[in-house]
Length: 273
Length: 174
Image (tube, rainbow over all chains, first blue to last red; front, side, top):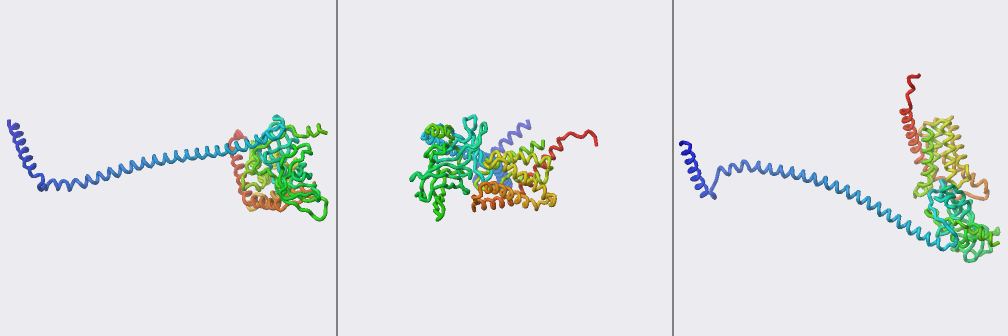
């Protein structure tokens, strides 16, 4: 009974207090202010701490994801660059092979395309190793050409590879003539990556810029293949020959694909005798 | 096993020299790399190991070169003999002598090549570019030869160590 009365009294007192405080809402509330001034800094601190931790957390994950994204993008970029490079290489190779194919159509002889896989280890000698050999129908002595002009001659043949003596080697010789005047001579390899047009008589009119082509009379190279252009003519007072320097059309530093003439003109030459 | 290692090194050098070096813009006037192997063999290995590898390397190079067949083999053999003769007077392990050995090797090789070019054709002359090429090779040799020989020596030391670890114990026999 006492308890019930107590509860009722408490409810009534509570209602009175609430009705009084509700009327004084805009008035001063000292205990509330004190409580706020005590608790608010803590709230502020906690909120800042939470924000700080949230910031670190989100930044960390953000950086981790950015770093991952960055490395993914780098990888993708590298792949794209590699692919672009491959496409460029294929494009260049395509144009070279097109050129070779067009050239192949222009010569009446049977030719085989090969790739240069190695160069002479010494700068004193000029040879190249190609990826075609006896099994592909190559034999010693066959001429090697490019759309730009004469490259050299096969000097050694193994089953799948061959050694080509380049035209700029000292031991190389190609029977040639000046295209304009039809004066004959022999193009030999020089010592500086150039060639010399030997046995050209002093009386012959050879000028700088003249085109030298193969004569076909050596029975090795087809007639009319471009060899190079005359870059220097020296007519000394003595002697019956003039010194003619020829700059080859083929850039021997950059040869990659070549054509080997499988049925050189010596057959025609022999049959024509 | 060691012979296989010698052959591998030799083939690697020959392939590098014939397929990679000619297409690198700065290295087209580089000296002959197998010379370093011959110098190393002459300085640090026994004749039983050195002579066959020297001959084999020479034959490899001869096969790839337009030089008269046997020129590289001859050059390497003479270089090997010369190095062996020199170290009977000088200390081969001296690191400061390595540039001398490399320059000697490069010059000796070029001298033999020039003799092979000029002697059969007395009228032929060595151009200025040819001489410049020799000078460039010597400079390259001075700069890169000694570290490469040291590298080769390190590689061989590792190989010998590896072989020693793998070799069976002598079963207590002394």
